[in-house]
Image (cartoon, rainbow, N blue to C red; front, top):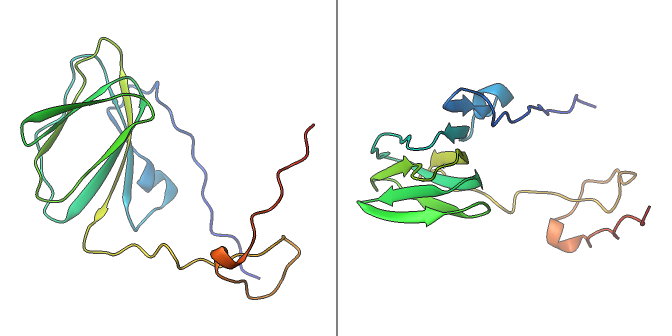
Length: 143
């Protein structure tokens, strides 16, 4: 049996760093993932990616996402996707800090959401089956 391929890290929204490159910390190679913390009135450059699409997830604060000059406000629990060749800017107009999780990947690489195998229990040692063929487990008992 091979060793599990897993890496753990901890988010630090109180860091003084503007960008925390979580993908590098975790050894991710298929996509980029960053924690961005902006203080009140801070903003990033207007930018565009030739091939990369990005998802911005608001963890804390209020994001003003400017897309092709039009402002969109998103609060905690909201997220947005911006495709390649679309100009965007991340802005914090709010009086509190803004904490974002940003995931980026090449839009040319098609994600395979059905490439998984599943098992009923940890004791199952077969080859696994497509997840949609395996029932969800029962909820954990109340403690």
